[in-house]
Length: 294
Ligand SMILES: C[S@@+](CC[C@H](N)C(=O)[O-])C[C@H]1O[C@@H](n2cnc3c(N)ncnc32)[C@H](O)[C@@H]1O
Image (cartoon, rainbow, N blue to C red; front, side, top):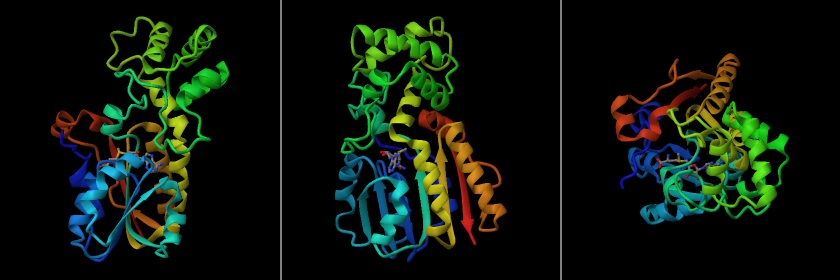
């Protein structure tokens, strides 16, 4: 299946990559945005592609192996400032962040991101980080109160308390190690949800993924670092997929504008139109915001 990056045309329009510029894609994924940026800079300038998931980098590496001006790095985009220092290229002309998980991860990572597949409950983008608890560790060891907080805060799930209670009851009998087991527990906690547009496990799965990977903390951290890494005239764009992320981006950009450090490229966030949503349902909740530094 060809992977279609979300809001590709719009990303390229707001970033407006030119030959000789230095671009960073902090969420390389299948490389859709990266490919288009590299093409626009015509082999002149520098491109740094980062992903926390080594599998994504390995899949893209052969495509750019012969390009001396493309660097791929395994890591967290929150660490972009340190990475740039190491590369001795502290400032960049463009940054794209396409948040969350890729279709590949959802469909075939084997890490339990999707409630539609029966897989082990892991949910870490970066499996090499052993100190980071997996979703199974969270579900089987956190207190009922902590689980309620995570599911409510990161999933905006109104039945968070009931789901957490059922998880704790279930794990007294046996550890919950797979997505299928967790889905069954969630379904038993929220009966009568069959008529809703989304699956009853959607919000709780989102919450666990966000918690396990510290997604909002990563985003907050890079948003705070933007003035240190963006060149004068540099463009930064973020595509978010839920209101928790979008709120952080919106507020951070507003503060940068108030501090006269940047201007909004678009007053309102850009969303995909019906044809894109039809072709790529994952794009339906996407919102793109972009700023230009002064
Ligand atoms: C939505 S996909 C990106 C798709 C990509 N723009 C494309 O065109 O194919 C998000 C990617 O970001 C990665 N990711 C998530 N959090 C990250 C982080 N904190 N640092 C680096 N990569 C991260 C995921 O592993 C995933 O591959």
